[in-house]
Length: 140
Image (cartoon, rainbow, N blue to C red; front, side, top):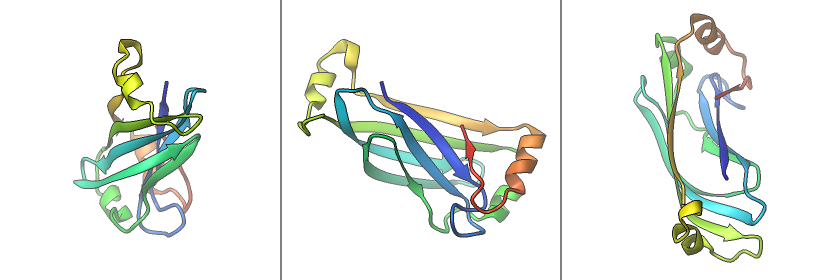
């Protein structure tokens, strides 16, 4: 099946001062070339979110890299919960053909919808998160 990972750069990926959140597609089944997804990424405590659509091919990441989530907001939190929502809207086989209906009509291969939180409450982990250098990545 599909395997996902959430990555957070607390001080930013390339630009200092703003956290960046990425959803990585780690694995696609052999017979699948790409998937179209609708996603929501956010931080519960700061009421920050990002909603977008993206076509993932093989191992790829996508997320928000703008000035939406200042590091100052993260530093003020006593815990952090990153929420992810993923809805696969289309599945394409290795030939590029849309096979979404085949998945939707097969009980063993349902079109996936995922939601998962990543909650950071450990004091030591939060401290590392708050003091991370530019480009430092934390993964769920």
